Amino acid sequence: MSDLPIVLLPLAADEDALDACLAALDAATPAGTPVWLADDAQAGPRGIALVERWLQSTRLRAEYTRRPQPVGPVAHLQQMLAACGDADVVVLSADARPLPGWLAQLSACLGRDASIATATPWCNAGELASWPRLGEVAPLPAEPALTAQACAAMPPRHPELPAAVDHAVALRGSARARAGGLDTASFGSWYGALVDLSLRLAGLGWRNVLCETAFVARGGEGGAAPGDLDVLAARWPAWQSRLADFLMRDPLRDARAELEALHGRLRDSRQDDLFDLDVAGADA
Image 1 (cartoon, rainbow, N blue to C red):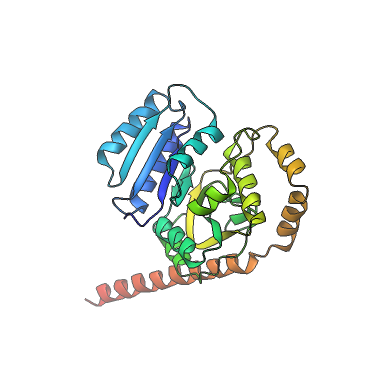
Image 2 (cartoon, rainbow, N blue to C red):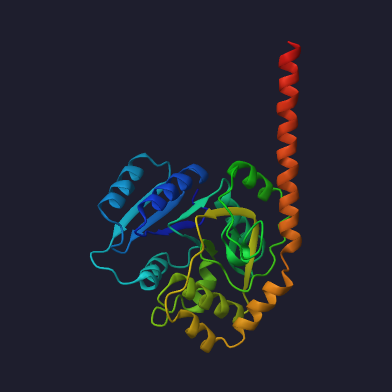
């Protein structure tokens, strides 16, 4: 699976979320995929034990590193990105839960258009990339396999987003290298640093898009560190108005409705199959 992006998973202190993330990652990702679990001295003893048990059983080609002292989430992630060189990567939040097919779909998205620098999948708590409603936190998908199947059936149009979203994002290595990586001096969160990186990439002519054929669930939205939004407002004066315009126009409305319709048709089709089986069983 060397043709797939490297999955980067910076660990956090929430052990229950990490446990669920690792289980979903293992179940939804092709065997042999390279995965790097990197710990900026955040995981406690239970979290470390969870990781060690997972490493012993996972089908993935996973590695775990831990810093003796924390350097901060942005500096830590930038070190990870630098170590990956110009390889394509997917940064996954430690509280995310990937649905089946997620990584292959993100990889295919990057492959369809060389101008795509970042690809963000749908998420129940994905802000700009939220489904079924824009900007709302919905429950985790009740039927993950069905949701993944519906996403995979979506036409891959890859519409533009104002910025990538931090639940999961595929980053093209060549674009990332050209933009200079993350600003570790100005931002205290991956959330803020990712918006800044997205805007720099857009200024260089790259695209930040929605990968509507993939879904990565999450327990709740990410957030900026104190001061990050002020830095974004000062550095990118048009950012707030562009974001407000996106929220008001809601250009993804039709795409969300299309996914909802596909979801419903697949569910109905499956129920029809079950009904046919019940009738056949009764006749027998």
